[in-house]
Structures are given as C-alpha cells and as structure tokens.
Length: 115
Image (cartoon, rainbow, N blue to C red; front, side, top):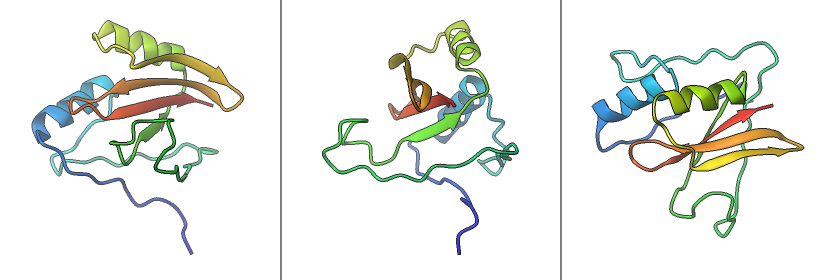
C-alpha cells in the first residue's frame, strides 16, 4: 500500500531561523512555502524505524530524530566545521555506516549518515 514517504512535517518556534539554519548548514534550499522537495537518488532508501521509550540512542525528550544520508561524511564534517557548526557526536563507524550528530537551532539532534 505505501510507496514512499510523502513528507516530514513539524512545528517550530522560530520559522525564519530554522529555515536559514537548514539552508546554510545542510544546504537544503527552502522554498517560500517553507519546505522543499528532496528527490532521492537511484538506489537510495528511506528507513522507518521505531525505538522504545527507554532506548538511549537519542534523547527521550526528542520524539523523532531526522537522519539525512550524505554522499561523503568527511566532506560534510569539513563543511560543518567551516561554518562553525560543532558536532554533537563525533564520527562513529559501524557495520551500518558512518554517522555524526549535530543540533539544529532548537536543539533537535540530527544524524548525518554515509552508507
């Protein structure tokens, strides 16, 4: 029945600051309707996964965590450093890939992932 995600939507306290941050930090061009369309590349997949309330992977007070797949995690880290964004979690390498965390202006953890 489901053929893919239609979108990710959430409320924000400071729309202009959040739009600017996502545009500058993650290089997501936000349109005047306060969103954008991210077109997946061939072979790209979206993971939909549940965590228990007491799972410690990300903070319990954060109900949802965004995970963006990147082409090259080292280039992403270099970009983040060049614009003064600090990592909330240093690069981790596992059987699932390479990961770093950053925080958006409202303190939400965001995971960047290289498969």
